[in-house]
Image (cartoon, rainbow, N blue to C red; front, side, top):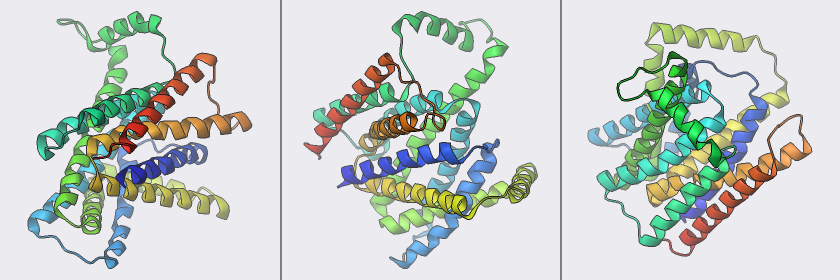
Amino acid sequence: MWLSIAVTAYFINAGVYVADKFLLSKKIHSSIVYAFYVSVWSFLNIVILAIDPWMPDARGLALDLAAGLLFLATLVFWYKALHQSEATRVVPIVGALVPVFSFLLSFIFLGETLSERQFLAFIILVIGGILISVKHTKFYEMKAIGERVKNIFGSTFGKIKAEYNPTRRLIMNSLVSALFFAAYYVLIKYVYNTQPFIGGFVWSRMGSFLGALLILAVPDWRRKIIKKTRRKRKVKKTALSIFFFFFIRLMAAVAFILLNRAISLGNVALINSLQGIQYVFLFFIVFILSSRYPKVIEEEWGASVLLQKTLGALLVCLGLYMLATNIG
């Protein structure tokens, strides 16, 4: 059951990702402002408690709030990385590291293990996801990449060149966001192991809302949010575009709930390794849209790129088949 729920969540996320790229022509240039807008709406999740009213004890509430605050911190670093570079550079780094970190943390703190078949499927899914998400791979560029890494991080005793500091920050923000994503998934899995799903989910969202209020307590951050809000009021939008925007946000919320439900039922590392299926959905959606509407969505579709992404898609399908025929 968790497999079908996770696949559905990643399918919705793929559509949301494409829609966001189409709709949001103007970026929010502050990761703090972005995290605030995402988290402040978390308060509305309180209405879900009407389905199954439940109140945690002091220890449980502390864990729930900590999970929500951790997710807010994750968003800050994630958006910092996205803001510093193209998504095609950030997504492969984070997408590859989240399953690895999740595997290690879930083994250490939850005692979760994988069977030999599941572990092989895990490796195949991660490799397939990387092949789909990166733009292209050319092995003859490895030497140049090695030199660049050396320049970015410096030699053992040398100094890092100033021109590579932005790249270093990008890598660090990507690493931190991947680690925080994994830590959040492992913590929320522990919450779901000890609390009802609806109660744990809603009260953890209150942690994100609390984080949004804490953001407002910082004068500089509060001024940025007020400035951005006033600027948004001057922008005229049609009723159709507003409806479509909120519909996409609703779909994003549905995907988030489904992903949390899958985590509550299944293995954290395996569910995160399934991000590769999201890249498969993205691959087909972008391929179709870029073919029919090249002026709206531009994408490189050379023979080598298609071959690489097709190979990645086949690996993801193989990994999915291995999981579907041996869930346990």
